[in-house]
Amino acid sequence: MYTSIRRYKTNQPKEFTKRVNETWVPLISKVPGFIAYYAIETAEDGWDSVSIFKDKAGAEESNRMAPEWVKQHAAGLVVGPEITAGEAVIHKTV
Image 1 (cartoon, rainbow, N blue to C red):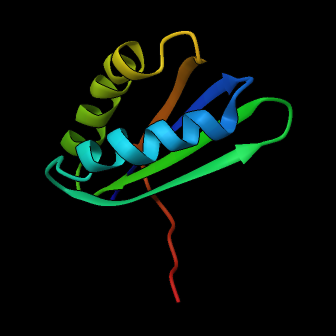
Image 2: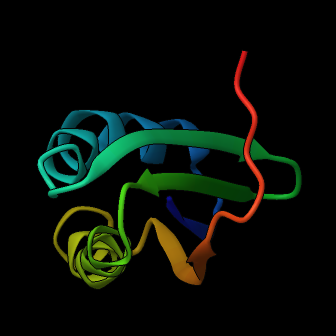
């Protein structure tokens, strides 16, 4: 599994969450190898997401798509993303 963590800064986290849910989630979920997507509204104007894919290609594609999506759907609303990505070396689910 491969994971991508994207960090944004926003002063309108609720609006960004709404836009992500309406337009980004349907888009990313179509990327081959998609497993899951999680998002967190953090303290101090932060907004983070975690995307999980079966393979590296899916994670890389989502990281290529994210900045373009921000330009088209959230320009002026957020700064970012700052991206951290790699292979999930430990994972446990219930």
